[in-house]
Picture (tube, rainbow, N blue to C red):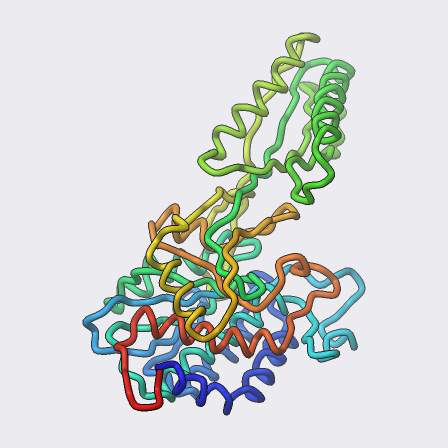
Length: 405
């Protein structure tokens, strides 16, 4: 039954590549995603989605409606990217197609995946294959520095107001065409030393800093993933009480909460402070207020908890079987998050909304957020077919015809 999807897929490869290129060449730093949102909305309408619009949060949302008797599947990517490398602009020559790759901010994370998901909806529409359930495709705002503000608004307000209750989610984040089911988390904490004597405060702060840096030196260099990132926060005071701060980025493992990490860091610092006396220490996670281009605001923590979907969950099993049915070698895994501040909306979808979530996208995690970030054109094309097949397996009505299997 996937031959019809394969036939339709062959006719859109050039348009798919062109759309991915336009997305990458259109700047969309976090909280400034309006131009890309417009491109996505226009493309959804051109692909004849049943409905497509920009919601109150700035997300571009499209719908392919089924008979309404089956579950609603949600495909999600994010439109925002990290800032361009210093000294580069969106028109630099490296943002081009070379050797079968598209280069530029967000190419891997995750505009290549966005193009594949948007066209997957169009593919299901063009194929005329019957759907029991509904498909929602969303390109969201404020994932990179807004802690998934767009996703929260989509699930809490946009979809409920339209009567949609998603049963499961596929993220188009970079997995190199693997099926991923979660990742560890991280937290950015500040340890503050306070006291009446500037020398004592500085001494305790330096000792805590040395202790944390020593813990970093004991980590295995075979593991690229950062367990601890420490830096001194500069500050100048002329009158007491005096304070000095250290910023600590710390990995969170499965089942570990932000509060657990804060408690551990504070106890570690307090033990050192007790040796010197005359100072107090505290650990906290800074909060920042983020505002999306559509005007929505939220106060968010600098960090992300770990999340996982059970690798035996039917969502993952059915996605595996669907990809295997079209001859794809399926590899299961988790995002490594080998650099601090990487993450995904899965933390919100699974931990807050309890939605089974997996990842499937064409990009490579290791090149995300790098100066030479890229996505392979061939893998965008494969991701289109793979995403459409997964979606049809989950919400479609099996069709068996002579010559169709």
